[in-house]
Image (cartoon, rainbow, N blue to C red; front, side, top):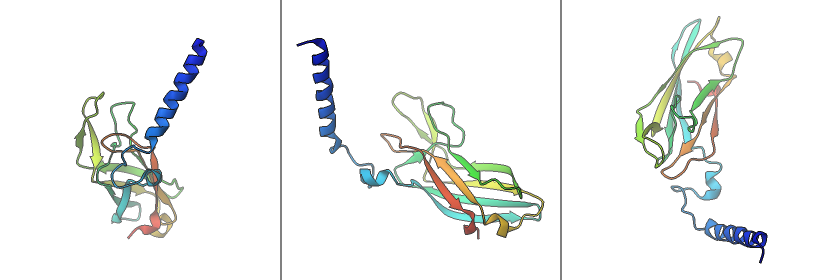
Length: 170
């Protein structure tokens, strides 16, 4: 048997063994593998106006994270981690003056990385928008987006985008 034939047999055997174990992988938390592809691990639980003047609107977004999962903060110190990002659809009527992530950092450890901080359970994002005339009815026509990557104790999932219609402002 030639080396290339042995190599092909090895690859086919490796592939076959991998396929046999596909159905035996443990499920992440309570979700099936099919559901996990579409799961939003982060949910918006509150959106409120915390201050409103003729030239500024302060918004507070409150989120929860599915138990057993965590996401990265908005600032990460390692290129291998995907930072959580938040943006509000651009408009000629306003600019983002400030944006602050508020959370209780949790220390997390992976085998080949040093300890690092993650967000679990819940967090808030406070955003101040400024413009010439800040009318809530105009703002309610726009959306915000939270871009994040969720991880559990064993793996990280493909990044997700949670779209938030601002018409939910109370």
